[in-house]
Image (cartoon, rainbow, N blue to C red; front, side):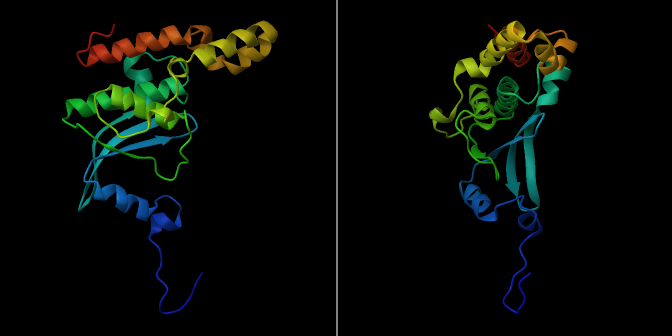
Length: 201
């Protein structure tokens, strides 16, 4: 560690590699609430956060676990379809709370074109909250609906049934064949929209 009278100890979250304060400061200068999109190995988290003097205030949030608990999601909670649905849930809650526009905050994550973070952003936008973002960063519609997962499952089932059962054991244990994921995605999306007064069609 550096020594001397001119050395300033960085803030704790900077030392831990959790917060880039220069980037955070630029986001706060926008004066808009932040859409905080975070991914873990198994889940997606989306929050609309307002900065206050006493600390960040979470206006609304959504977690991919809530898809299972409240809307009957049977798929994996950390994939692209779940990321979109989590964003949709957050966006609908945000619009209901009066949030019209937010600025994206991905923290220290690397922006990957078509990644789960941008699937979440697409869901928030479809939920009714404007988020400035290049549309080219969004996954395509087939990937959002999980068609790539269903196609891989079909191919694996025909080539190696044992590997198919191992790879999709959680889907099968919940009573969902991975080949039916796009249809299941549409059903869960419709349930979420109906819960917020949409037609769900």
